[in-house]
Amino acid sequence: MTKILVAGFKGRMGATATQMVLKNADFELVGVYDPIATEKDLAELPEFAGQHAPVFTELNATLVAEPEIWIDFTIPKAAVANTQFALEHKISPVVGTTGFTAADIKALQTLAEQQKTGGLIAPNFSLSAVLMMQFSKQAAKYFPDVEIIEMHHDNKLDAPSGTAVKTAEMLAEVRGDKPQGNPDEKESIPGARGANYAGMRIHSVRLPGLIAHQQVQFGGIGEGLTIRQDTYDRESFMTGVALACRKVRQASQLYDGLEYLL
Ligand SMILES: NC(=O)C1=CN([C@@H]2O[C@H](COP(=O)(O)OP(=O)(O)OC[C@H]3O[C@@H](n4cnc5c(N)ncnc54)[C@H](OP(=O)(O)O)[C@@H]3O)[C@@H](O)[C@H]2O)C=CC1
Ligand SMILES: O=C(O)C1=N[C@H](C(=O)O)C[C@H](O)C1
Picture 1 (cartoon, rainbow, N blue to C red):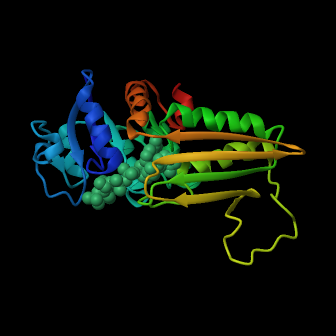
Picture 2 (tube, rainbow, N blue to C red):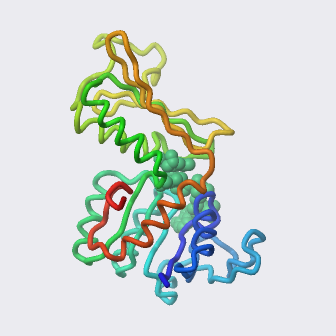
């Protein structure tokens, strides 16, 4: 059985991941982590009634549970330190928290190599999102004129989404740095054209009722192509999280994207 700890267990994703770990016979939930939790046992939460696991509120205290995997769905500010802590103790991180900078990821990858510890940071664990990014990269080769529209629930902290940033990075690999739109365009209201990544514009929509959606919209002379991905249920991320938990222990590097494990 693989021993797993979940950081951010009371959040939307952390709670879903905790349920996923409990449902899989080859996984053992050895603890959950949240520095401001007041519970001592997971079973104190009504949705986890009867499911006992220690609640940790200090990083070092988690080590008594001897986790092999650290699942992290927390907040950008905390996740970098959590991932560093996990790697320093040869615990394999499976991180879904978004908001890591390229420099954060590079530094953590170096640490993983030094520690000979495998792990994964993935801005999106859903298969349809991975395909949406790959199809978009393919299209950008022929249609360099593109705008990214990401749409999320209105409790989301980071903008643009991690998925939109990764999509832009992948598209930039093939289309380079090319300003999108009229070179002389002016914004009469600041922000009207969205965020700028290598000349591409990213638009972040936040509305109640949404979960996670992204549209990559290409334009050519007399034609257009829209590649869209929709998440209707957070359960959809769990196949990817479980797959990562099963594969990262055999790796000795920190991957940046679920596609490396598929
Ligand atoms: N990779 C993927 O496929 C996906 C990634 N995400 C990302 O996952 C992250 C979490 O999203 P979501 O679940 O919606 O957010 P929530 O706000 O619902 O959950 C975040 C949780 O983190 C807890 N938390 C805050 N600080 C810490 C800390 N220092 N250590 C441990 N836990 C902490 C919060 O607890 P408290 O309230 O007690 O402070 C809260 O329960 C986001 O970055 C989001 O973008 C989301 C969906 C899919
Ligand atoms: O906060 C979310 O909900 C999501 N965050 C991730 C992101 O920032 O890309 C993944 C997914 O879009 C859901």
